Amino acid sequence: MKTDNQLQQDVSAELKWEPAVQSARIGVEVKDGVVTLAGQVDSFAQKWNAERAALRVAGVKALAIELQVRLTSLSERTDADIAEAVENVLAWTSPLPECAIQVKVEKGCVTLSGTVDWQYQRQAAADSVSQMMGVTWVSNQIGIKPKVTVTVVKSDIEAALKRASIADAKQIAVAIHGSDVTLSGSVRNWGERNTATLAAWGTSGVRNVVDMMTLAH
Image 1 (cartoon, rainbow, N blue to C red):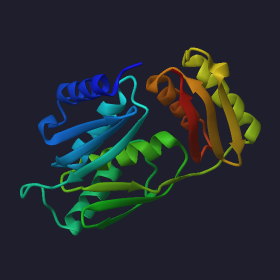
Image 2 (image 1 turned 180 degrees about the vertical axis):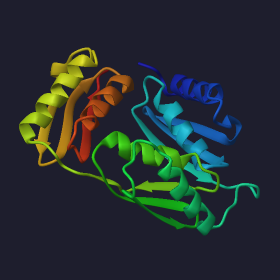
Image 3 (image 1 turned 135 degrees about the vertical axis):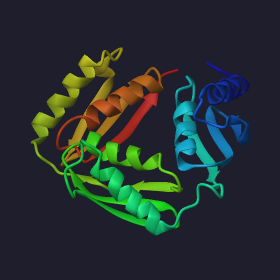
Image 4 (image 1 turned 45 degrees about the vertical axis):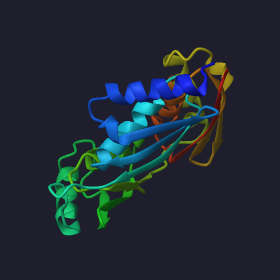
């Protein structure tokens, strides 16, 4: 198991290695395996990329984000300009059904609502908007339409976990409550945890995934 000092060094190195992050402006603190990122970044995209970079590091138990998005003068846009740009980007995002997403912008914070059929469509909408100039936050409130029965959802998820070659898929328990899926049990690292979560989201009809999995030591 890594010490907090080792984990801090590894996370800092990962941030420096990530070209989409200005690591010099981000501080890293670690206590009992919990990593805190603090400082300022120029865009929401940099904040998101810093989070993903930190979670790639083995040994991270949890992540606390205290990063502030401070736009440069060249990046500032009015809410009306951002809303128009978001509408255009979503219209050109191929996985999305036409007119499925509603957009609200307030002080650079973009709220997405509406319903889609699949999680990948929901994620595609958020990913498209998160990279846009002037955006300081993305609140993804897009819902997913339920389509299938509990039995089908559970069997699809369990089959997907096996296909994903997780070390021991039997260590991950799948519980279904309506269209909500709860994953519990033990995984070896964040990579397996992420694979299991994506497998659950990849099943048609799943509207919410609750991650209660733990990392094995």
